[in-house]
Amino acid sequence: MLLMITVDDLPTEGLPYVIERTMERGAKNIHVLNGITKKGRVEYIFLVEVTEKKLEDISAFLALELGTLGMKIFHTDHIMLPFEIITRKVTVETNTNQFEAEVRVKYLKNDYEQIISLKAEYEDIKKIALNLESKGIQISLSKLKTIIEAEAYKKALSEENIKISVN
Image (cartoon, rainbow, N blue to C red; front, side, top):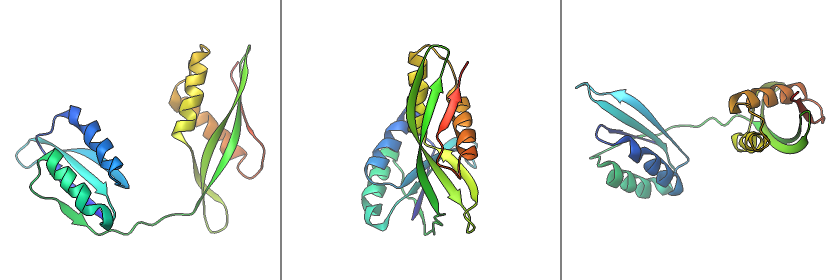
């Protein structure tokens, strides 16, 4: 199920708290969008994916925190596409250092086992970026993600490891 709640009087500072606490209560996912109401006020649109079992608890919490008088419930179907998670070894080499890390990569494939898309896990890339930063190597998280995913794609059909060279 998908809950939709609109709020036009929530301070921005309250968003992280509501999001985190909603997820802790068992929401499957939550999105908060900016919108403009019919009266020209700025609003937030909360889209919260919940199971029927968690509906009462989560909706009560959101009513309390957001001060809403009601919410819409959409009954939805979620199409789960088949994917495979493969852990890849990443070797980062610099002029003076070398270190290894592991990155989980999600591969989405079609019925013919061809790769449609792939994504490296954020938390794994973040660890590598922080490790590089601690060694004085500055590379943006988004660039690092792009490099790792490009190498993962090249190696997708083999068991070879990913190698990134920073010279």
